[in-house]
Length: 416
Image (cartoon, rainbow, N blue to C red):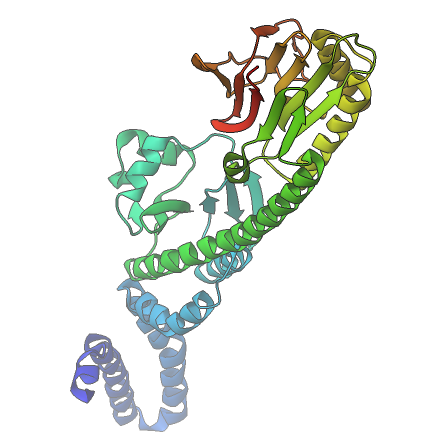
């Protein structure tokens, strides 16, 4: 072990220093022998030349040959590595880069972080960080090329289009930051680095990747847990609003299909109301979902829609007028915030007829003749909603309504 450490010493630098010292010493001895009466002047002159000329000359020669950078880097690696071990999130990464820029006296250092919304961070020579939203998205072929190999490399080694892209941003060295072969960030330098520092940058890039991915997971996991809690609460509200699974009205059974209803990934609501002014036994039905993802607020908006439906259905005799009245109420009273996909139906049990209006997308219904996918159209509550495209179904014996490929509601007429 000691032999290896002894072998790694900079012997040529030691020899150079000894040679200069020996020459200075021999010169001083000769001067003393020749000019014995001027010993104080000789000593003063020797010290002056040794301190102010010989020592700076040795330092300059060692620096010019790369020794100073090499050994300064080695002695500073402990501090460098100590700071790296403390990186756990983006703010730590930016603090580390600020320290690195000031310590290494770098210019034009930037960190580009790819996320749902990409940002670029400019680290100035004084260590200050400036954050900007990435205006021009990095093309996909550039990201593929950068992700193919790890390690910092000069821009001259990149393909011509990517090299031009980097030159336009005054980047001379680029270090892709990968996590499991996925490009998550880029570290760019506006000046060349000493060879001994390139390996340190590679080491830092790996640690930075772990820190950025760790922060992303910290954001994702709580968000996922929050959405899961919201969805469960929305399901409770939905079950309360929809009422029992099966309803029976004058020769018809209306049933929510429990298996599909439990598996669906969105909030939906079913409602049934009888017209109070129609001469026949006329029932209005609704099966609605919000046009956006399921959350607690969606379920509450469905609750508001249910209230409008129940209050309006009692005073209507036509499906088209009910649909238009509901559309108008939502836009005027809810500030156009409620937009719905689904079905509105009018079931006349006296005449054994059924009218149906569908709106939105990903809707289908099935009769004995098979499945029919409805054309996508403007949702209820949105601009362009049309309440006149009524589908007539005479003597309906079985009708299944489906939303986003989930069969949710069965209307079954009893045989006479």
